Length: 302
Image 1 (cartoon, rainbow, N blue to C red):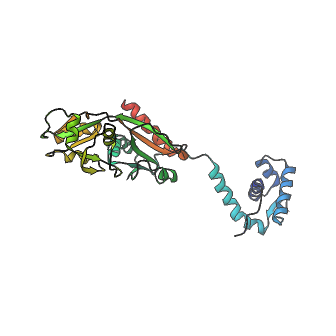
Image 2: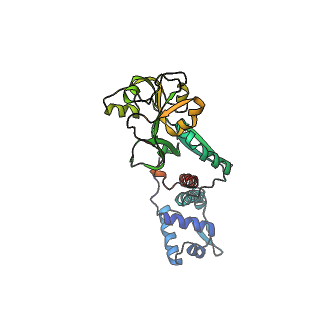
Image 3: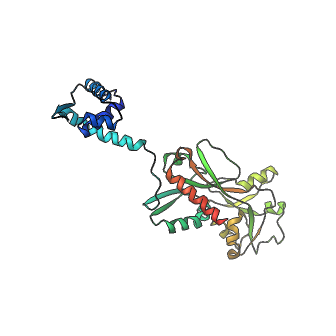
């Protein structure tokens, strides 16, 4: 592979302007140069490329054959460079657009009112939910295969590579069916005496409840582990199991599934739902537009 010639970019800009104008005077005006400076720059370019490049005929600067060949690559290259260096175009949701968001089943469920409103308003907008395979897919956010992650955490986090927006905070409740053998309020001893359903979005063997129990030197028996928050409470009817789950969803399904709800009989930290995006896309118009729409939606919702 031959090396690129070591040329001042300004000389290439001069070449492009002179090729298009066929006039030193007009080229000098376009580039905000004096005619003398323009002529001296042309001389340097000729010496560097070893060709006259332009010859004066009837007061016009006509390109040589070599200049025509150069123009076929130099002009498009300069146009591409100019486009690349321009500020990003504003995001236009009226044009066909796709937003790719990684979610769990629960975070997708939580997003549904916002996404429904967005899709109803912007007919050419397509939202693609993909399964969140890890808690925060930082590499996918960086390389652009994901636009955002909608996930959750149990504490404040910091990552040099990520931006985040706290969405809302909520507590956990413990659910059981109405026919459960424990008829009283659950105590810590009865809580660990029964089998449990573990919600483990990333196939964890322990959840936030198990970590809280460990601090008390207690353990529980896991009868069923599932990555799906939305499915988990449907396993409770006619069973002796307990399920500690997000209160926001539990309140939606407790009547339909005939469930009893109570706060867990131990201290379990609240969860925080969050939006994450990569710091390298901080000024990406698409990300900025989505986050602004999301903030506006919740301001109205409040």
